[in-house]
Length: 315
Picture 1 (cartoon, one colour):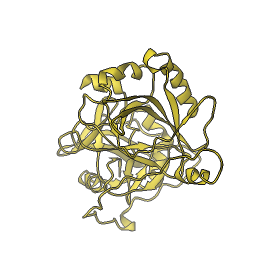
Picture 2: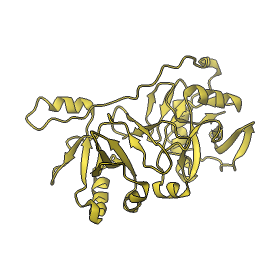
Picture 3: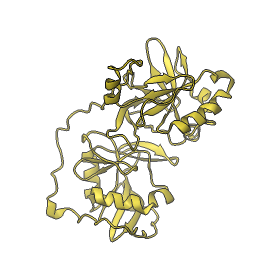
Picture 4: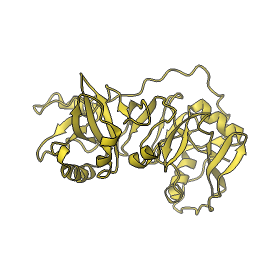
């Protein structure tokens, strides 16, 4: 298990062997691309859903066809999934992760995702230095509407299909708090308020640990952790963090006497930069008020309550 953490850096994975949601997100796009991914065991690389779009190859000196594209590096095609041990040499050259994508009697090796073509090209050069990966190349995934428009023009058609995760409709939802009970929205300001120094983790309620906390402009922010036996989790900074449905996240904040963050409160937390300085988890989006998915890029999107995200509570 320790080898897996060291090798995969910030790879999104559930050691409880549950299905996970892989979020390939880039800031300038109007929509987030969501792909299912699973991991059979901690001794195997994660596997992307067979329907996850991986786009088309960029050959020779051809550049991206869209400014809002994302990118993969294809590192080979194998008859069997690549063993984790074989991926170690790749992880020494890259800043992202290695994935397997099943096809017809084959498994495609993919590295990424990247939202910057320059970064992808830099890491492709490093990969080409490895004897077994001279033929690695970059693939471009375009937004669905741009790919559809390209079908009416002479250039080759793009086969990218934008895909949202199909989630079962939640049978029960927590009651929406009344407007009067919500914390007042923070007023935007050109001045960044310096956060108070974060305290060490504390136990807020039975079975709930406060992993991170800070106070900004009179609003207290905390990241609770329910424990590895109480909920699904993923690894970041070599420790586990929650993956909760909206209903679970809502109940967790209630148990510690707090509420879910509003969009304005989330943006104020991001503006403080404390999440970067104090190593708050950044890889997975957070649940906010009214089933809002809050990304560390600053984007906020309406999501289904069954998606599994982290949560930040406020008071």
